[in-house]
Amino acid sequence: MMKQTELIIITDDGEAAQQLRHAVAEAQGEEPLVTERRGIDGAAAQWIILAVATIQSLGGIFGVLSQYAGRDKVTKIKCGEFEVENPRDQDVDRLLEICTRHMSRE
Image (cartoon, rainbow, N blue to C red; front, side, top):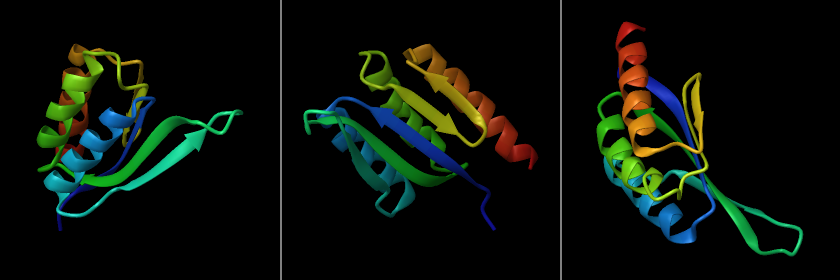
């Protein structure tokens, strides 16, 4: 059985949300759950992408995440019990290392 972890990505950019959804779907072979959180005025304020990721799919997903984090398009990433808010691209790389190491020990 492949080891899995919960993956949550929050962005306030619609284009980033679509690209990240696509990256997760491609890496996992199935569509993640994507939901919009709307602001008081009814406009979409954030997109939340929920998935169950395997250790094998994390590299592909985090590669795309790093591109968007470097442009301030990702608000939060949660991988299992580890979480980063307003990540930079180097934070994404470090989180990938931590998550991969943690999952391989379980």
